[in-house]
Image (cartoon, rainbow, N blue to C red; front, side, top):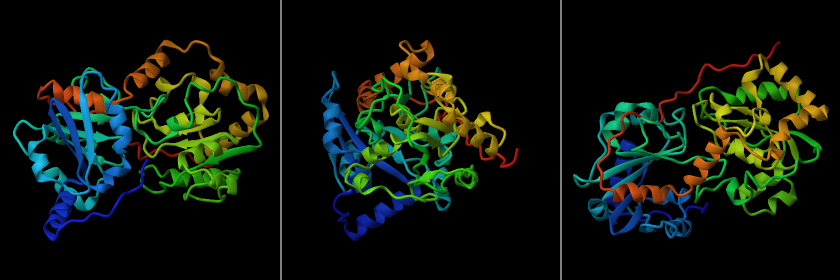
Length: 389
């Protein structure tokens, strides 16, 4: 999305206030006014990385029942916060030094104010997500990747990474569509690709697993994690990093798609990007991944193997056996998806505009209280895949 704008220009007192809020809450913040017209103010310029004013307002223009508007400001406004009907907090990465987050109730600037917690990352990174007491005590509405269920259907807004990604996202939806690929691609010259820059911020240590794989087979790693290859000069001419990534994926038969957390429903662009260009994902992530696939064989599931050696042996077998390769790509030619995957697809399409959904819930003027955190699923920190057979 857009890059960070002008540096913050705050007075000394405002700097102190900003630092205090950051340390205590470690959130990104939006304030929302909902009195006929809906307007949003972003607390600080970091949020520019999450929202583009033009794109969001275009999204708002499609809200059939509401007139919504967003204004991005680099300075926090107490005055606007006090008049806001709702405040949206973006969960930032939890820091051990900020344990105060568990000991404080988020400030409501007026007694009828609605607080909304939004995250697209899992509890493996933001540990307080799974604390139901914290969520119930501090938020009326949650927004994020977990699917809606009977416990949270009134208080949670589902925002999936795919198959069709939500409006305003910055990933594959801008350069490819999951359902756009219609033909099974020919075998490619390159075998396995990994593109990752988030190297160490996870509990199950996927980098160690990747190192084991790379010790026994060739993997082209373009990201900063275990980097061993650079983008070509032609790649570097592509302005969008996401388009650049998609262009690279198209050149490989397999893509490493390891999530940074192994949590239920946490299925990100790592899966959908690979599928959308006919590259077979070597997947490790959500334990319920099978619920989200167009076909059970559309991925190579790391959980199906007893060792790294077994996994690598199978990848080589698929690469050299056209029938096996077609087994993993046959989903592309499926004319009618299963009922389960059609539901996943429809849920994705029906949740393209989370900000409109937020407007709708705020406009209802109901003070909602979650029954539990929708982010309950924990990280499997003990997941290992041994090297030897």
